[in-house]
Amino acid sequence: MSAIKTLEGHCLCGAVTLRAAINHSQVGACHCATCRRWGGGPLLAIESDQPVAFGGAQQISVYASSDWAERGFCKECGTHLFYRLLDQPFYAIPVGLFDDQQDWQLTREVFIDQRPGFYCFAQRTEQLTGDELFALHGSD
Image (cartoon, rainbow, N blue to C red; front, top):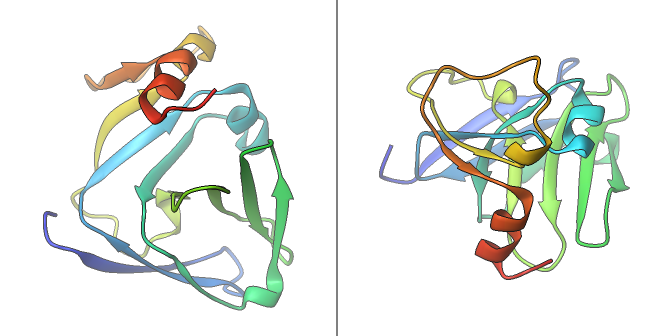
C-alpha cells in the first residue's frame, strides 16, 4: 500500500466500529511490559498519524496508561481498540481489528530490550530499544 487506503474494522462484539486512513502495509510489534500486560503478549499494530473515526463511541472506555498516552477498549467485550499519544496525532491500532487482513508485513519491533526470552519472531525487522524509540520521537 503506498496510496492512502481507508480500512474498516470492529471490536469482537461489533459495538465499536472504526475507519482508519493508512498509507502503508507495515505492522509493528511492541514488546514493552505495558503492552504485554494489556494483551498477554506483544501488541501487533498498524500506525497512523491520521484521525481514526469510531462508530459506537459511547462504548469506548479510555485508560491513561502513561503521562503521554492512553489506551482505548470496548466497554462491552473488552477488545483493545487503540494506543494513542496525547500530544501528537498518532494511533497504534491492533491489526486484527481490520476486516482486510491481506498484504500486511511485520517490519518493526520496539522495546526489544523488554522482550521476554520465550518468544522470537522469524521475520527480519527493524529493532529498537525503548531508549532508541524515545530518541527517535524526541521524547523521554
